[in-house]
Length: 245
Image (cartoon, rainbow, N blue to C red; front, side, top):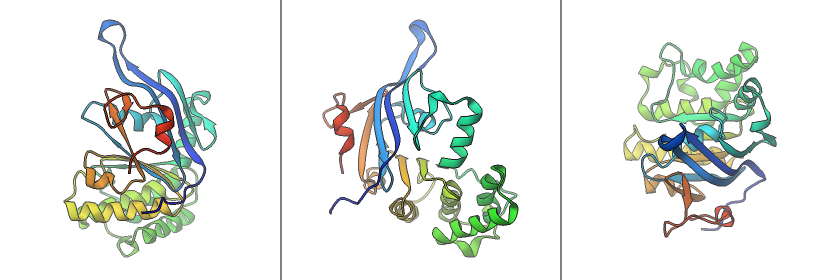
């Protein structure tokens, strides 16, 4: 398969380290991670439980801050922003997709998708229009007025993907998005996510399933907070630009 065309770097991590605690009991959750993710590119992150995968997602998305190192997102270095500015950048540029969907049961699909835009100051009518466009993109505009408990797991995850990328946001961080789904539905969800990335977004996918990682352009392996190559040794930064397919 020929490589997909990718755009400029949207997300760049350099020397990212995250230490929890102090002294002998300190835990180094990430240790000098380097990573670039480009527009039009889906990067899978794999590793054993406790290897630092979710920590990496939280840090590159601005939910947590590194102990050392830098994160640059959409041209802005997160360490140079205060908490309020990070939150604004996160709302504008980053969407999250979780294993358990995280939809609000009392809101319809369209209301779940439009809520982040309304919280960011977009008028209700405009936000609802953006929400329906996002639902149309993931193939479920006809479910816009249904509540989460009236939808299948795969449909709910499509709503979550629409919510993650509604409006101008271009980076999707997906933490085991297929974990609560059967294999067929999981493949359907990955197909939708892949299509959205190919349309011009960038994605970072945490998964423990090789068949879902195969949807990515390349795979990064974490072990004990360190990016490793196929032999289990610390990967050189240059290898992160090609990865494995």
